[in-house]
Image (cartoon, rainbow over all chains, first blue to last red; front, top):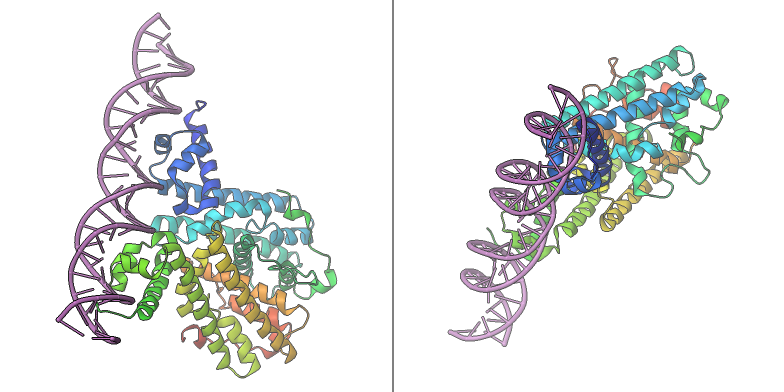
Length: 214
Length: 214
DNA sequence: TTCGAAAGTTAGCGTACATTTACACCGATC
DNA sequence: GATCGGTGTAAATGTACGCTAACTTTCGAA
């Protein structure tokens, strides 16, 4: 409808695409839907992106950036090391309200490994996520808050596997998939895993608020 | 080509469908491909299944059965409780060579939550998996081999989240996504998590063989 | 004021795909 | 040896979708 300079329009298309891909998946989302959602006609999409596939890859990269930025912001606002650690676990983009929807784009992409371009994009994203988490774990270890029993690398992978699995289960809406009847949460287990036996003595509950803000 | 009684044909179609969906995904697999792979023409598919979707749901259920059966078989052949526990972790269908491919059907299905029928099928599968694992964990706890610090339910969910996340990462082919440079594996972490501090003293390496047999 | 580049539109092309219609063949039962 | 139920096929139908060609509108700089 309203006329927009190319750069702005491109951004808007990407934002719309991320939301649409997250909801409907790569195959499920149509260019017609996207155009309609963006308030534009289809050829505009092709003015800004070569094909649906390159648009999807751009959406993956954008999601990756959003995710890392959000996580980083969460970490920065928690200066206490224990806080930081809980944030690392709890502000996981795959787990958070806000990130979860968008993260479906990433999961969708993981299913398209038959396509080498998409595979490359997703590999890069995962590796950069791992780098981020491993660095954070190493920091926590140096500060003496996390057992050095396991390397930051392997700990980071475990956290990522867990977060991803959780993020996949969550939208299924299965009652109690992350909490037992006593109110113990998967997250509590993870904290104990990372903190070693200090978890029992440090012992505060992980913050709930992080779940809901951005 | 060869003439088959209805029941046999149905089975064969299902087997072919599971393999095809695993490889190409729900959206990616076409009825034409399926027919060709099964050595039959398309209308045959519709003689046995109402639609592609109901075929997909049948494929989900079949995969679910296969997965549980395989896992159960693995458990049965390990009578020593410690063995059983390692099998529980290592013979996870999402992790094993054999199951992993098929398990992509399940993951594909998890992405189709917009469809209520598919959602219902996948929920049921997950719940039955959880029941299986939780029962096994409870058993291990009663035998005194696993710390009772966490409930079987929440432990089982953690294991499932982990296994699922691992199973999603694996096909990306990212080097070292489950092992650090010292050869410590994610699986070792999990065992320690489950066994509590006994892990350090019990301390054998998890079996490698399970990874490769069926 | 004009004019050209950039932003947008209408209308369609070609194709791939799920699903169907109409017909042929086989084999057992009477 | 005709008939009937069940297994199979060839061919087509409708439609949804990615993508494009050709044309129009807007806007700012000269």
